[in-house]
Length: 123
Image (cartoon, rainbow, N blue to C red; front, side, top):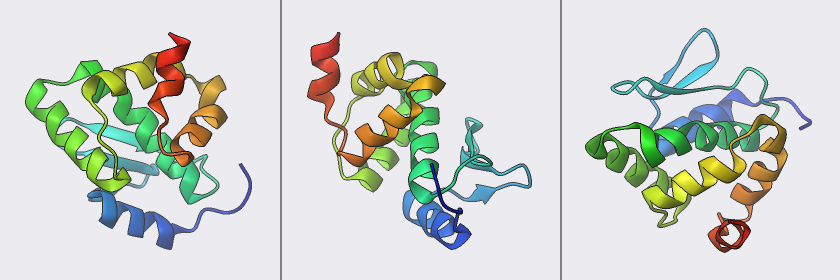
């Protein structure tokens, strides 16, 4: 993770994804209603930011939120990334990739367009 975070890119990502708040603690508040957020203080580029957002959405969408909230966030996620992932896909990503020591692998997975078949074959 090299480079310097360009906050113009962060604000454009926020606009495109539908994130309204970046607070003084460098937390992107992905969803105010459910207090779903991602800390971006250690991010070096916009791809790191996207990885952190996905990382912090997998569990809530996959198994942590009530159906209505999970569906709303999943719709926002799918629209931004132009994919059609399910709650089960988010749960699978959570179980297989949402570990700090796998962050680089997760970033690559996202950049490659979420090839879920790779994870389904691993389980």
